[in-house]
Image (cartoon, rainbow over all chains, first blue to last red; front, side, top):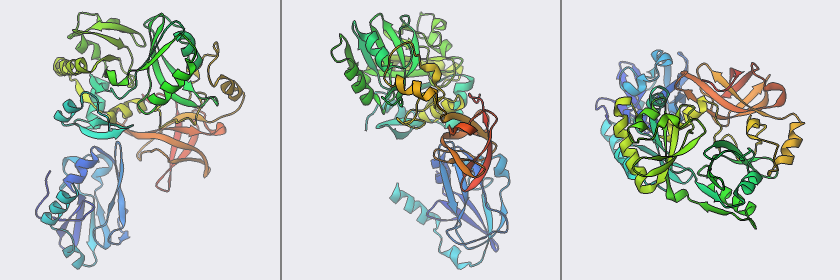
Length: 128
Length: 353
């Protein structure tokens, strides 16, 4: 299971990549493996204002339903429309083609509070 | 937690294990969709040894069976029938397949969660009768080999003409040891279930995996067993009913034969004259119906979803549930409430595929 070193993470298994004033958000390889075949994705609307910790949408596998949460406060500026027809991109490419949303972050200090790859890995080894 | 004799084999195959009805069972080995499609296109093998096995034998065996089972089990030897056991109110305690293994012997396969209860019901019905009722669940391995290539694979293991194992008929097959084989399953595909002892079960599993390689056989878990049965609209005991529904409500009137006296019969005869809920199927374009979601008509609750998933064959959401009398006809347009949103559905004829 891969944990990308150059990303930041949230306890709830989202990853965050800083792209200028925006952040790109997805779920970790650990999370997609745990969910297995993702078959349906519900994404937020572009333009929606969100707070850190808000529910952004829903991922469904054959057996289960899971929510994913906003890692920062800000505005949704883009969502991955390819997931509508190919939700399995999250399984095959969780860190690239399977990204979920892009958020314009309001407060950059929130990003610094996110977990580093090492911290995320440590947290998982403790809960596993 | 209980384990089937094949538990270590499943772990060595990398199975993802879950708890089901007190058993630790494989949910999937590779992934649910792949395993599902292997069964629909080729063949898959399931360890379903958590299922119960109850043997009913003796001079009064038929009489006792007829007393507790809705279907008419006065049938030829080697015949298998799907049947229900009801309580006095006509509610389904469990569904099962019964094979007449002899003039005076019946082999019953109830569900894992209900086997103890069914055993007690059989015992009570057998009081004072010339009948022996044994719960042999721990003595048996049950392997389901399912899919259009199932008989070809098993033919590699025996001289017995496997094509002769017809749907809902059983026979004794020599795989190196004689096993009871029934033309049954829970997938809607051609296939069979093999009942054998714990040690020989492991041997058949290994031999089938080996012989099945060139037929695309995959070991399959309970995950795809659920999606396969859902696509066929089959009931899941404990989920689609748990002593709260009658066979008339579950669309299983065909397993009730009124030519004999059985527990719950009077209640059914009464309900026959009344309007009642009905078990229906519906398809969603995108989002997925799940257990417990409400079914509405003009914003009024008229039913409830009891099973739902993404159909791997249709690539659409499919759901099963109960809907009130006025709204449960095929073609009826309803809403399923998914995360506070009304999703439009239409009742379709079962099975889905």
